[in-house]
Image (cartoon, rainbow over all chains, first blue to last red):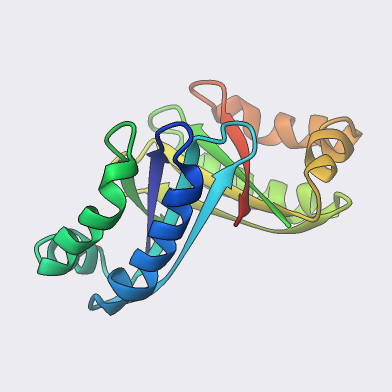
Length: 96
Length: 96
């Protein structure tokens, strides 16, 4: 199991709209991807324009190839991309 | 419930020692703090010197006051601090 951690910066004043959009995008888009095992999204208390999305994937390739190279990725970015104030910072993590 | 996310940079070549140290520090120090609800620590696949520690706290103050102002914090930092290549970046998050 791999954990994707995405650090997102949202345009000021757009947080409420973004929260609705990402919940929709999780429920209707990314959750249909092969190897998707669950997702959480949280807002920073200290930096309210910062959100951390965490997605569990069965394998690294389920995200980097399977999802990102599928039509689902375009749908996903169309829903949440307009709220980004900067490119997301994304890495993948494993427990040891 | 509040999630502390700490972004840690570990000195190159010190990862194995750090992994042992933080597992010890979680099991014997931070887990004794009031309001502690659990912790995970994971290594980045893309940046092997990067680790993300996530600690669940009952309230924000259980971490920022209760833990950080207790003797447990000195014990915690004595065990894992020597491995840091930079000051940790720590924020607190809530689901919405």
